[in-house]
Amino acid sequence: MGVSIIIKTLNEEKRVAATIESAMAALPGGIGEVIIADSGSKDRTVEIASRYPVTIVQIAPPAQPSCGIGPQLGFQYSAFGHICLLDGDMILDPEFLPEALRFLADNPHVGGVTGHVEEMQTATLEYARRVQRNGSEKRVGDIDRMNGGGLYRRSAIEKAGYISDRNLHGHEEFDLGVRLRSLNWRLHRLDRRFVSHFGHTSNSFRLLLRRWNSKYLFGTGELLRASVGKPYFGCLLAELPELKLWAAVYGWWALSIAMLLFLPDKGLALGLVLALLAGIVALMSLRKGGLRMGLYTVVSWFFHAAALPVGFLRRRRPPTAPIESHILHKPTRTVAERA
Image (cartoon, rainbow, N blue to C red; front, side, top):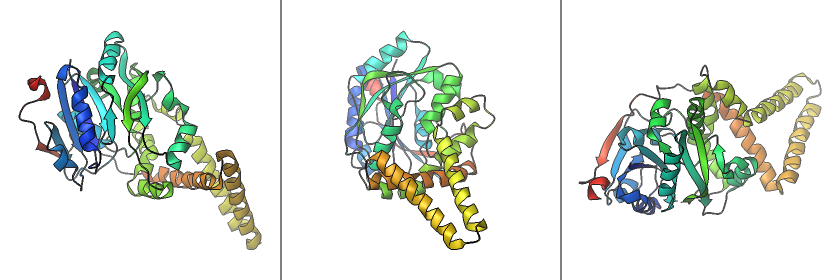
């Protein structure tokens, strides 16, 4: 059975050629297709991708870019029994798909399989903080989500309704994971490389601002909104430990506001608020190994906590509705026909 490799892109001119070449070379027996699911690139991504025998589809108004829209756009045009998700800055390991396909064939209750994501760039503060917090991203065996992509069974995706929620600007693979597991599908990580990833290298504070502007930070609130009333809502709450942290941040803000409003000595109130802030930054600096990392951690808490209610209140569109899009390029022959 062939594989539809979906490459999600948005302004990926730097790496997209290498990503496409790795995907084409990795198709087992040459059976399958490569689909570029573009979220409206303004650079040369589409021009470069058009040089290859791949299908290129791009969102069209009123569709808007989001983390969840790319996989669903590609899935909408896919034809094969297995779906492999890649970002446009990843290099697919040539031996991953054959091993993953064998694993799925031998384990009919597994809906998706992935491997390790090898980071090729110097880690930003955000990435370092995420790795420290979430050791599960390296765990081998059964997992709750396939962060970074992997190979999914089409039949599992179809039972779950859709591969990714177009409304989500983050947590789209966690959303898919919890939906699949609620239907008794398992997810698995092999102890081998899946892709090499060339991620962000920009200053982490600048990256934090960019993630607010791109609505990426709204993802947690959007995920909660999408799951309200669903049978897996309780499971989702239990598996989002950051919710406890954001609740603590809200408590901190409430205490600070209360001191400023109700303490008669406003100078003392302001001093206590600043002292509390300085104390928490100092504590996190000790835990994280430096003032820069401690300050970044606290600033990141503030951004994420502020983004949660904004994301929760955002208007949703039906995740199963077809995504408005255009086909920009189709190969004269499919990969399967060339094989």
